[in-house]
Amino acid sequence: MTVNEIATSLATTADTVRYYTRLGLVTPGKSDNGYKFYSNSDQSRLRFILSARQLGFSVKDIKQILQEADHGKSACALVRKLIKTRLDETEKQFQEMLQLRKRMKRALKQWDVMEDKAPTSHMVCHLIENVNSSGIGEA
Image (cartoon, rainbow, N blue to C red; front, top):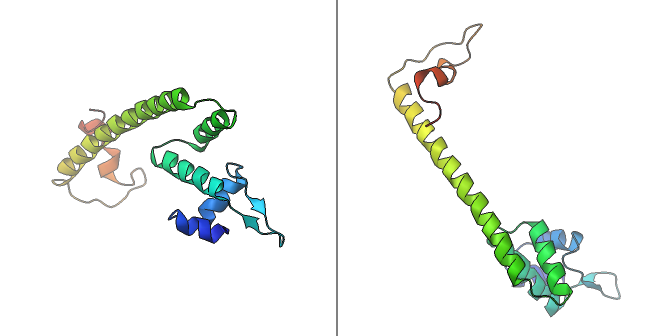
């Protein structure tokens, strides 16, 4: 398969296929005319990579997983460990985003009753500059 054919078959872009090829995660053969030629095995490997990315695995994670598999080892224990780490990171980011959302809502509520002011030599926007002193800071 050509890069465009494999991309179409996986519902992705040729640039995505080229990216993972450039990283060495997929190693297509070369045809007589010098074009890269992707096999069914390459297609399966790319499908795995795309699925792993959808689950939040980083390229570094995927390299580790593929190395385990390429050496004939089960990557399942590694996959469980890595996804647990990704889930913990995602949960932390989610909680931080919830706190940010609360601060934003508080700010909007307070700013609804405040007038707009022109900037001065020591103030750009009084709404933002008064956030910490107005109780909108950390929840």
